[in-house]
Amino acid sequence: MTPLDKDLQKLLRLCAKKLDAIDAEWAIGGATAMAAHGYERQTKDIDLFVADDAREELIEHLTSKGVAVTHIMPPAHYIARPPKTKDLDKRLDLLFPALGVESLGLMAARRHTIDGHELPIMPIEHVVALKLQTDPIFDRDRYAKDAQDLQELRARGLIEPHRVRVVLEDVSDQAALDRLHSLLSLDHDIPTPRLRLR
Image 1 (tube, rainbow, N blue to C red):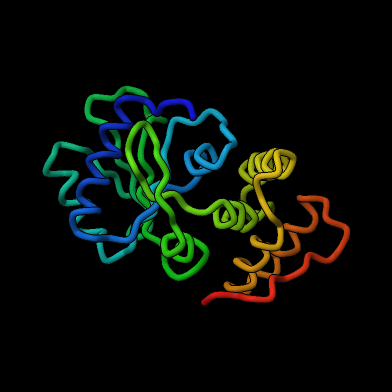
Image 2: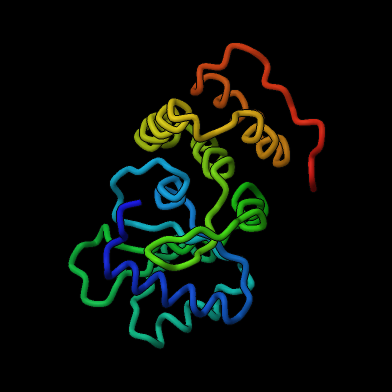
């Protein structure tokens, strides 16, 4: 995996240290998670999913360290930028999910080594399920980018469609299940695993 930008590394470590100290549920998602699972694409941001009960404490900690935290869609989405950065695309997206694929991904996260640090990474099936929840009617550009990522992940053998299906069935998202079939060019029924842990 290509090393993360040094400023983002520092900011991520600042968050990680605090979140681990308060025993919060958290995980890295998005392109950084895909890279940890074996598919890299260029990105300047890191998606950090955090259980909502740690939101206030994390934001207070960051601001006390001089990190600017911007409200995008409170209470679910904030942006933290490394101090003194001029590149507005270089940021941590702080995402505090309600119940759904994101919260399931938090609970299923496993630690991987990134830049010499053990960090919780969202499972690839949850990352894929989130991409499948993008509605092309409301966000055509993101949908096109997500579709390309999904095709690359599938071509490299990095996702198992039946695992993604289980995640989407758990949140009862039929539209995303339909996109799973069409975007991954599946022309047959995907077998559901016999055992489903809850």
